[in-house]
Length: 256
Image 1: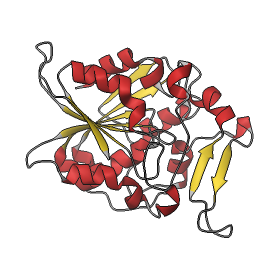
Image 2 (image 1 turned 60 degrees about the vertical axis):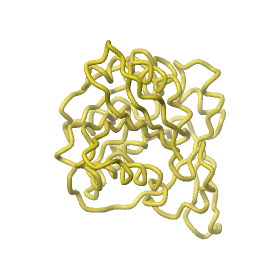
Image 3 (image 1 turned 30 degrees about the vertical axis):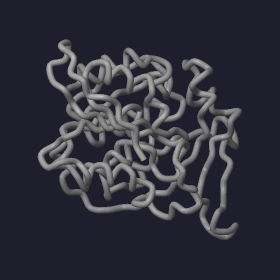
Image 4 (image 1 turned 180 degrees about the vertical axis):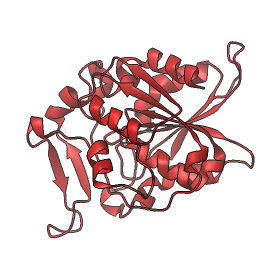
């Protein structure tokens, strides 16, 4: 499932792009509503996907058994693009893994990939240090997760929820209350693969300086290990599409 915004051309834009917005854990296509509107009003086409089993999806997360299943809505969208069309992928947080997966399979259809406080690891080559850099360390807050064991208590969890009492202090400490109240955090599993078109796609990383989920030092470590073409910084929490959507919009346009 995905939502499309209109594609009327604006005289203030140098060109019209097709942006594909990929949410992170605990969110869905709905989280992009402010950024989507800003991009639409500037004349761009925007598609915001609901990954399978994530908040906003109609798919039961207990039925999502692989990373391919989880990413299917994004991969289906990429596969449906008309010949010759190229999109700009934007991934937030764990959505960076989905963006890299799409880069691996559809690099020839991606003009640029933008990572917003996102997990940016090379596809299929994750070392122990890569995982340390990319996986949030929330141990300072104590036990923050609720686990769902949809396949039985003796099997790995099928969903992980960030408890509601921790969502504001970890994800949204600079964001307004209203949109964040809609969030219910879910996470799904991951698997590996082999790199292909990835290095042909231009990458931009947007750092969030006050991030309590993917902390600034983790973002820096991923940037050092796999340097993007450009690095930009926002003085925001983990969710700038809520806390500073206009600034995020301007940085995205400047990155093109």
